[in-house]
Image (cartoon, rainbow, N blue to C red; front, side, top):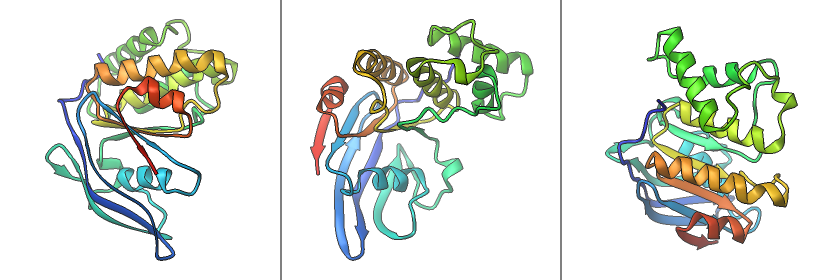
Length: 215
């Protein structure tokens, strides 16, 4: 079974992002387990830069300050790979040279050493995504909605303690957006992950159901 969060909260304590001496944003918020905080604003307002700062790969052209705490752990000095932050982007970013199942296996933590157990975790994830027969499928053959579901399950298999969403539904057609939004929010909230989403779409914010900050 995909590991659930232990009810962590994501604390952004007086976080500021500056570019060329211009303050782009200032955030002082806590995102509780199972909640969604949505940031809305125009391009260039610093939304994606905030996600990069939290995740640990902010471009050095930006100057960032403020503490990021995930439950009792301060993330500021930790490398990205140790922050236990999951990211979902506009593009699914599935590895084209791997099958769907191999993409998911790649995300399973090194602490799961048994090949049988690793494959069981992946098969369970495929079942949750309603793609049980797709272990050997080529990612190129998947629809946009199927790719989005696999991308989410790959993130969740890495056992994150918080989830960052960077315009994850923007490239889906209108008919798919509502379905994939529901899938993403349901699975993330079920695992009690604090969720921070940036978007231009007011429908995304409404579907998330949490606090909205407009930059």
